[in-house]
Image (cartoon, rainbow, N blue to C red; front, side, top):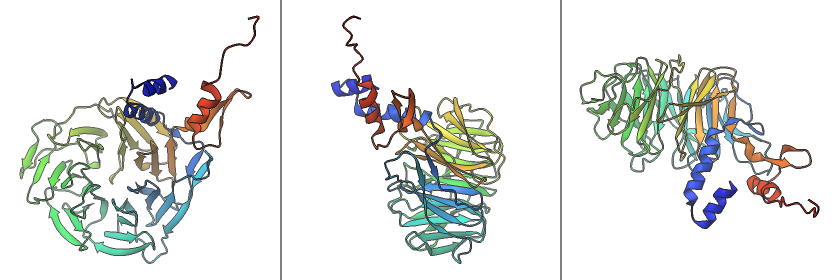
Amino acid sequence: MIKCLEDLRSGIVEPSALVSAERTKRAYNLQLSKYRDIESVHSSGVNSLDLDVVEKHYLLSGCADGTVYIHDLYNFTGLPQYTSKLICSVDKTSRSAHQYSVECVQWYPFDNGLFVSSGMDKKLKIWDANCLKPAEQICLEGRIFQHHMSPIGSKQCLVAVASSASEVILVDLKSGCYSHELRGHTGSVLTCRWSPREENIVATGSCDNKVILWDVRSSKCFLKSFCLYSTDNQSGSQLTSTAHDGYVNGLCFTADGLFLLSYGTDNRLQLWDAYTGENQMVNYGDIPNRTKKCVQFAVSVNTNPILAYVPSEGNIFVFELHTGLKVKTLLGHYSSVNGCIYHPFLQEVYSAGNDRNILLWSADTQGLIYDEHTKSQVPVKSDSLRSVYYKKNVTLDTWSSDEDS
């Protein structure tokens, strides 16, 4: 690290290269945090997580008993030991709560004063986060497995809804009504994701084993249907190709929107070029996936290479995105993991499972320095831990003052 800092000061290394290297190192070295955790308050399995887009300050979670919780992630104590406290919740006894399981929660992308929840009671609710009361409630025909809002949709406020109906419903937040339907799937739609690059592009995965890419400006036909066994992906109104040999219950775009990762009950991950629809033929191996509902997984941001964090039963597998190399397995949950999200500022992962826990995975070495007296690593009380480490250890003069030596 000292050599990197010297190269940075002399101009040999660009600042962005050093930042990328540090982010990548942290993303590779995640482990169950020994010093920080999330307050355990959930009374049932946790199905979905989301971080507010504006500040990455608040963690939103939805549970199988219809409850919704918000935790404060910021640590202002200066201590490495910290528990993120619950700040508010929608209890299952509340008249505003979902009647059945909450399958998906998401913050409004441009303001953390709003969030959206949906679930098995066939209702999509838009909440005022300040008073925790629904500002709008929309009833749909099918059980909702996932919804998603575009992170860059500045001209439209559409929510894509994946449900037990074969149509993908687009709900306009401004009017509180259906905008239009995307028809092309022949089975229940389990997952949907907007592109982080093109605000009118949305991808959907279904029980018909298909992954379809849509342009919502034209709902009569889709852009393309990804094909597992051929690079000749279909477009228009012809729909015979499949992306998996099982249900597609997970989708995730890379941060630049150039690639789409799909997850299926055939125990496979598939990586696709989001523009050409070409299968990148990356072999991630066998990844057990037996759930018949949406699985939330994540990819790292601004790291080289990009890493994918994929829940599989009670584990989280970490893969290099473009090579398929399995980096490590994160162990800690006592039951099935339903989803995980990546914190781009802190290079941390938060995971949720049926064991009613939210676990925090981080590179905990940032909170340690080497104590010369005890000859061991100890936690320190400082916000700039790394600088303390250098001052106490790396910059020490190691020359002997013994003239006889």
